[in-house]
Length: 281
Image (cartoon, rainbow, N blue to C red):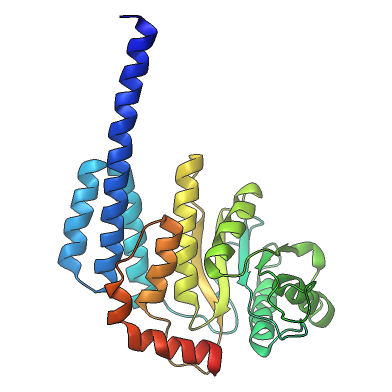
């Protein structure tokens, strides 16, 4: 047999094995998120063991994400109004400000201004840090306005922050897109640590989605993952978090895995409450 044909057949065979293994891992990861949302720790541990048997690197990545998810839901302290004092005072640290939907005319809502106020106080505390603002066009009657553009204008013209410190991302319209588009910019600009700024009820989902995107991007590029350090939040009048289902749904989008439909039926009351609080309130 021609040696080049033999090499081709071997590579073809190996690629088939890799594809089958990848599909199996994706299915396991979907079940992993499903059982974590349902708080079934014994099944979570068992699935992680199955993933480890197939790919130790992916196991370590997924374990880190699950451990981080536990941390943000059960242990993380929220820092209201300004970032904590012990963050890196270096130029490779950045604050990432998540945008908020605009008024129909393109102006900022109070919540968007509130997130900017937190960013301003944090920027004063850490004068070497850059400020990344992410958010696209969400105004019904103003196609030129973007969340990040309006928030930058507010920080510069109203609060007096130096415009050179601000980097904006103007395409994202969801938290998943916030992460996808912003993490790319952070890597390109050699940022090593970030602190996310958003509203108190949104910070857990925001941090988790960014964590997932950071881990996957680092894997694909062979880089050291950017570290998410603490948080700074605008205090809302909402007393509840968005819940594990919304957190897990965002993470599933980042990881490109499917969640079982039964999850949404089981958590329907929480979904209805979230819809009321975020769209009707």
